[in-house]
Length: 269
Image (tube, rainbow, N blue to C red; front, side, top):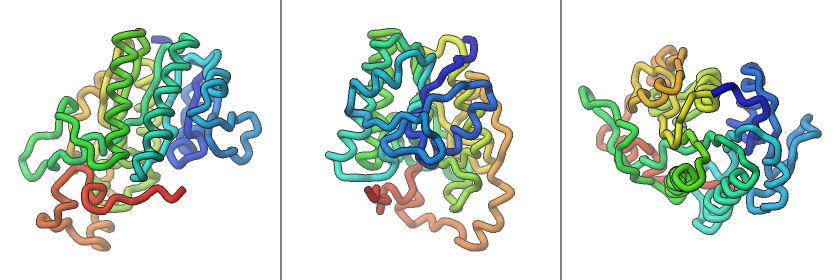
């Protein structure tokens, strides 16, 4: 499909949102920014709660597509996850449907399948159709988001690419992240491919760079036209020297979700 001109970027004040609002305009997008918090130096950004349908309707009106990054990105009590990630995502989809938006790129997460055993040795890469096994309420909310996207495609023809993001940071910060790292530049390449590929229906992809230590299969992402250019391997020697090789007897190292399985980081707000 032709590149959409105007894209609503939700969660624009967050870590990933900040990276993408700097990179996506390079692909020709006119971004409309939305977050629960005001965004410094962005006076035109929309400050709104995802559970405010009227504000969302205004934010969605006139955009060609949405990149949905907003919500809680760590573990939290279910009541908080329910409001921000489950109800909030529903409201966004409903207002997008009402305003005739054609496509959403949904920030899913590796934690939707976080209880999946990670590959070892000659094990095959984890396929995108592996059964969902969330490791937290956070991961559960991402499983819900993928199902919601499927429902809105089947019922309303609203297309979605659900991107199970690994870890998108300027550089990997742990040995585990060597397998799941998504460089910011590759993140922008993947979102651009997800916004412009033809006939995606509801497509689920894994979101990472072309890492030497990759754990999952990027075939469905590449089918969108995504061509990752980065690899975490240049950071490996330093991280392993500092942190050591993962202990195979550590339960947190046995699963894709890492320490989210055993001691998940808690949302501070």
